Length: 515
Image (cartoon, rainbow, N blue to C red; front, side, top):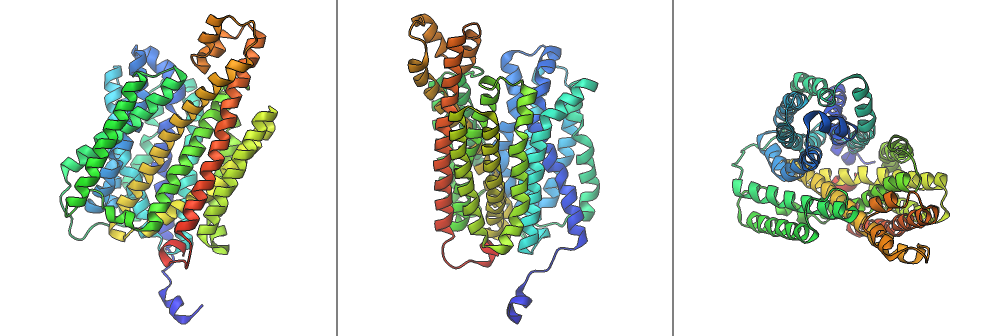
């Protein structure tokens, strides 16, 4: 290393930054646990509040919808008013709204509160990643910090259902919301002392027409995609398929108008110049494509454990822990691997490991044994954790410092869309393969009316086939075929993501993207 490089090296983070990082774990855990902890509480909550089927669905989903809808807006607000200020305001609102949700007396009140919690939650992620860029200038330290944040999010999502179940055993359903209050209050109390501030030197006005277009467009697309996935299972869809498609198209039109408007504005809500950076754009595309493959596969895997494996929901949840553990291991190991090899090579290698794991998943499903299937998913988790932690770092480090909040918001939007598209694609492919497989797997003597009923959905097929062993075996095999086919699709998508990233990062490494 030359004297010039030594002088140019960014300073290492002080101890205060690491204490600040520990403090930032609080909103990450709260966001992820709040997404999943409600699952076990829904039956109790619905009975207590006398909620209808539609109301119970909105209680679950209003939170995620509003997070997705407001991410772009909050990313810009973070850059404008200051990442720390927005984070602390959002955390205070999140704590207050959690108390309101815990004591909600009607389903409508809880739905509205959950929606407001989603808006508050949307303030946290862009601000959090923006602060990590300011706190950790050294590439290795920043990558480790991002990996730890990813791990915290994964852990929170994993313990959410378990935490929800434990709280319901000892308290009423409102305790699931109250558990988020203490960490948020600690963040608000200590954030001013441990976290730096970063904002534009000359903040400008937020364009409200752009806000309306971005929020409405994202809500329409995400809601429509979820309805398509629910409709594929014929379990919880509230809209006919054609209405869901129309909603997605309308959302895309609004997002197109949003993009066109950003090109004309002197100070846009989202700076499209960010996407002219091919490495940042490729990182966002990699995040999206990988999400479609892995989330869709994981969605079908959890169904496979219950429908085909016959495991109870809690046991099925525990069987996902190998994937979660290796995902965390991969994320934590990524910074060390990036010191030994170029980060882009680690990302590409991780994505190829995901492709390998998806291929092994297909083989394990064909074999029918549960242990090889769990090991194959663990392989996917290892590659996914290592790749995505560094993809996130590439997004954050490639953006100009005054637009880090917007880049972080774009990252979260990519993740949300990847998840929504993955669940929709997984559900759609699963039901198409399921129905096609039933045509050849059902016993020849199966009555035509019964066969038609079995094809309606996986859920109804298992309910109808419980007393007929030959039909039940055919239904299980058809369901497994859906996972097998999507595993092969996921392998192709992971390979495509690896190619996208490799092409974008080919050539001489840069300080911002490769360290």
